[in-house]
Amino acid sequence: MAGFFKSLITKFSKPDFDWDELEGALISGDLGPKLAMQIVDELKGQGRKLSGEDIVNVAREHVRKIIPPALPPLLPFNDRPKVLLIVGVNGTGKTTSTAKLASLLVNKGKKVVLVAADTFRAAAVEQLEVWGHRLNIPVIKGPQNCDPSGVCFDGYARAEKDKADYLIVDTAGRLHNKHNLMEELKKISRTLGKKDPTSPHEVLLVVDATTGANALEQAKAFHKIIPLTGLIVTKLDGSGKGGILVPIYQELKVPARFIGVGEKAEDFKPFIPKEFIEELL
Ligand SMILES: Nc1nc2c(ncn2[C@@H]2O[C@H](COP(=O)(O)OP(=O)(O)O)[C@@H](O)[C@H]2O)c(=O)[nH]1
Ligand SMILES: [Mg+2]
Image (cartoon, rainbow, N blue to C red):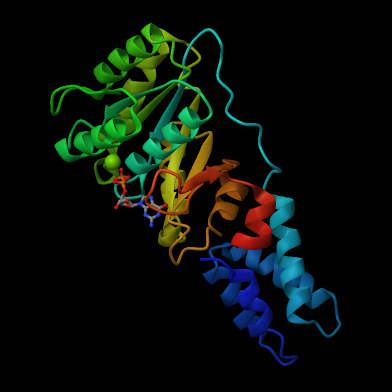
């Protein structure tokens, strides 16, 4: 993961580097063809002998201009639970991120209730329960294959009763069955809306940094189903560089919120643009 930009410094420090190769390298960092072209165009226009450092500085500056500065934290309300819906395709890290986010909030002294709304796979519910047990956070579930919106309803009621600060909903990710997923997410949203018309307050899409450009397609597909408010970029401890969050913001204006850097509860942090640009990318 780390050091994509740094790797460019050595790779393109020789004066006779190839522009196409540089553009290709930028695209391979998941920054997207549009931005790669803009960066190369600007570099070409500078008309002087460029060092690897110059190249990286220009690329960093472009990324800095695109993504928004650090966002305010997801503060709780004081009269009702803040509802966070976690969505994404299977395997991206939804369940793990739901648990890690809950852990982060609990460590800040907040009260959290979790909802296992991936009711289709028994293993998914169990997985969240294991986390809940470990972190001492209640997990609301229903019988297998039950309507996930009903579980969300129950989850909200529990969060209200417990005066929880946050209700975090782990959803299913069957994107291959788009119609059902769409209906399911819409119904969850409507159901939560009956409890609090302003909820869900955040819809966070989980994307796996190692899937590269495909994550943009996933973001587009989900954004059509349910308006996304943020991204959780996982597996940044692997080969993925997370560059994909740049074209996702460029195209959809959905900002990164959190990053996952491992499988443990503590391997999760708020996304900090400066850190991402200077160290991570
Ligand atoms: N290395 C690494 N693995 C992760 C991260 N987030 C999730 N995983 C792993 O990815 C796999 C799928 O995660 P899961 O939460 O079950 O995905 P879901 O299907 O979207 O709910 C599991 O083995 C997780 O431990 C991360 O940030 N880094
Ligand atoms: Mg899951």
